[in-house]
Amino acid sequence: MKRFKIALCGAALFLSAGLTQASDLAAGKAVWTKLNCASCHGADAKSPILPAYPILAGQHADFLAHALKAYQRGAAGAPTSANVRKNAVMGAFATQLSKQDVANVSAWLASQPGPLVVRK
Image (cartoon, rainbow, N blue to C red):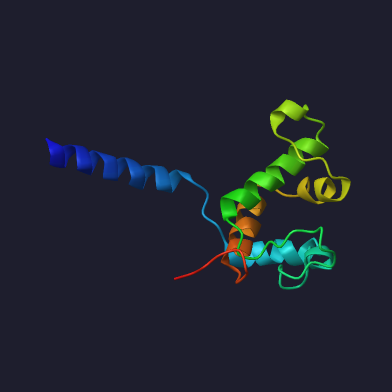
């Protein structure tokens, strides 16, 4: 019975992994380039032009995706209880992104070397 439960859990994880969006790193870099994100965050995504701008290279992909979605909600005028980020510049850029674009650029940024992550 214990083996059956383990197998069932493994199958559930396998199936749920197939339901998530696969990320395309090359497409993520293309989004980064198309929107000229480097103009504020630096060409390497870890050398922003102002200290107030965040370092993005090496940040967790799920955090980056969550932040971009919050900027989209903020630009759409969602109430503050809806977990929004209101910034005119980032909101304007984020609204141009599809769900797949968000997944791709977040994954690409997470794959970049940066001071925010220790890779083994």
